[in-house]
Length: 305
Length: 82
Image 1: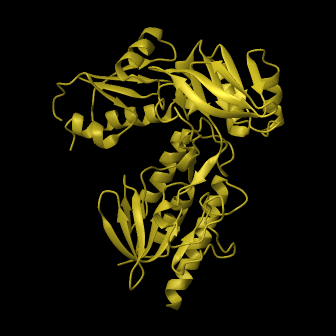
Image 2 (image 1 turned 180 degrees about the vertical axis):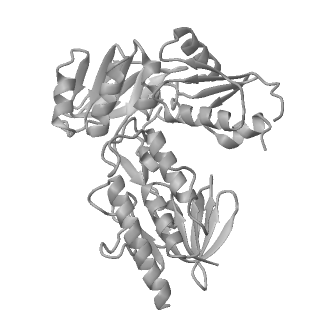
Image 3 (image 1 turned 30 degrees about the vertical axis):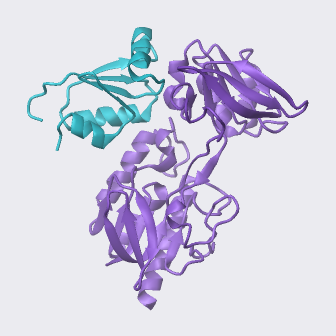
């Protein structure tokens, strides 16, 4: 029987793991990757104490720090399938079939990319539809691509693609771009970029690979089609909470509702921290701090019991 | 794997983290591999797309068996790494 099971290997999970080990809480950490969403980041410049670090090195730093602790059982690579209430706490079942019994659970599973959910997206995933511009931009050398989503991630993707692609469309649902104004200027001044506002993506078409994108012009309600070779989807993210959703209260965008003082969820015995929760600011440093708050509160809870 | 009798190729881009993770995994397990940077090498890019029927990296070719992405378990199995 564990005192706590930490789910997730991003900055939140690792911070929690380190603190749990130092508090001598009998703990396990389950994750299928280290580093969280920043893993694919080319350069992180705001992780406090580190001027500049790549996502890959960041992940290695976190993993090393966790592995240097004694007394924490690291279950990797694996994913949690279900958390269920048991008589003395919770039963945690992983995809590979491990079963753990624990008094408390800390959810630090972050979020994942939101998909468009339109016809052709699944069919052409990897065949022109892509979700990682840092990774895959070079493969679209001299091609025509569209980025969907005019937030920061979308603008960054436009920049990534401009190094390689012949033409870049940027489709935004609303009437204006939302990302960093400096990046906006950079993008607007490049003649290879065409920004299309009030565009609702409807269908991705192709044969072996993507050949086009159908969208609705929300201004005129006209159906339009662009001929292109690639589509990068950057429309935000959804929290990873499926395995625990029957036990806790989430808000309408799927974030776990927490007590911001203690990180406790609506379910006694379950805490949550980081991007999976209803915090305002989704940041590595915030996730780490909040997860530490959670572990310290779990420690108090275990001592009170 | 004591002596490598399989030919391993990896198609990468310089900015792709999963490519780095895969190469790190090869190094850790003493797997010899040949790397093709598809950001530079157009022929390799075409070959990669042809082989894998898709446009994402990394693509790993182990004796003609194609893997897309860094799937540690699948690579271990294919390379007979315990």
